[in-house]
Length: 638
Image 1 (cartoon, helix red, strand yellow):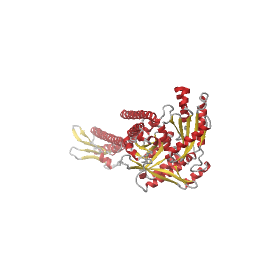
Image 2 (cartoon, rainbow, N blue to C red):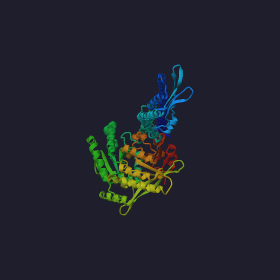
Image 3 (cartoon, rainbow, N blue to C red):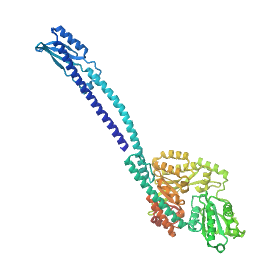
């Protein structure tokens, strides 16, 4: 039984007992009072009648009968009698019937005894007789019954007032207790939240202590996050430009080309300074650093609002920008060239007219990195041949699926209506023993002429532009539920960043999941990190809704916005999947190993499992387990 129910029961029982006791005492007191009054009445009237008879000179029977009758008829008596000294009745009136409308049980529960009043009648110096007066108790019972009714009404009214007051107090206590319970439940679910401190001193002390604990946990989490972010930047950032270091950039490029988060084609833009050695000789070290910093700022800002676009410094005067959202390399090259010419070149061209060249090539999924970089070098050579500060883009034919923009809506709408989507399943295994933790369901679509099997990265960006992600995601969940009904184990599905803020989708999803309570325990939902921080409040509400239904919730591609990860303490996440760019080549990158060890320790401190994405070699699995990862997935795990 809950504490609030116990308090309610205590209040009710206490009120009833107090009411019953007070009512009983009041009725009993009234009964004793009425008994005393009857006794006094009997005694007084008996003395009055005896005195009246004593004062009569002639005590004839007729006169005595008239006096007895007069008293009996006006005083509601049960018995009035006059008896001579020998016990012979001189006059007597008796009324044994009762007209009182009082329940029998009440009379038996509260008996009222009418004590007879007795007085002596004298005739001179001799005793004439004895007067006995007994009042009828039916009127006393009627008065006591009416008094009990009044007591009951007053006590009921008082009980309502006291009960209402008690209810208000208990509700206030209940709200305070509810906040404490909500906070404790949130902590159990790995959501560290603070609540207002209640009025009651005891609860206030408990809540204050829990709030302080939560704040300390958040502070520790934020401090550790800042430390790890500083370590991440030191390991993976170029100090001079602020761009991604070569290894980190190449790891990110490898994930874009080999993974499924983005489309099957995109552009790689190369920027090369004409002569880095001559720049150092002309400007000196300090101004050359300023030039490089300005170049890095322009290239970094080029990715603003473009998901996945990243710039890196490959070597001294050579930079690269991967553009997964721009399929045409000419558009990518023009964009970077225009930004450099507008925001960076004017400051330096007067002193160094031939400053840079830009080249762009198209990449496609599963392309060899070496081949791509060779083509990029060749394109740079072409750009250099065109003259100072020029750009060049290699023309490499059509993309994998040539669908005009105005036909995408029809294609995707028909695909949703005809259920043309399917899921491909990839295992997520424990790094130590290789046991399967869950299967990750990845969306596929057959489309085009001839039909090509498209991954989510090929069509989901266009679906987002057309506001079609919600029905697609709902279809993915239905496919996963159907699969879970056929097999054992758990399945994780991805929700689009654009979907998590759609309340209509959330209502439909909740209604769907409520029909499968057993399957919900084996269903995992994950959202890309950029989508989580773009709509953080919506994701937090969605996560709480899904967890209330029994599902597990995680973040995919975690680590790109690590500086904001202190917000995760309030989400109650079950797991995170670390971005592949930190995992690629982990065996030869001790800096990333230290960073990932710290990340695993921090996540485990909050009860969050950590899974490595993009594992390329089975030989890396023991190291991944040693670092602290709970699971792994990637090309090496099929």
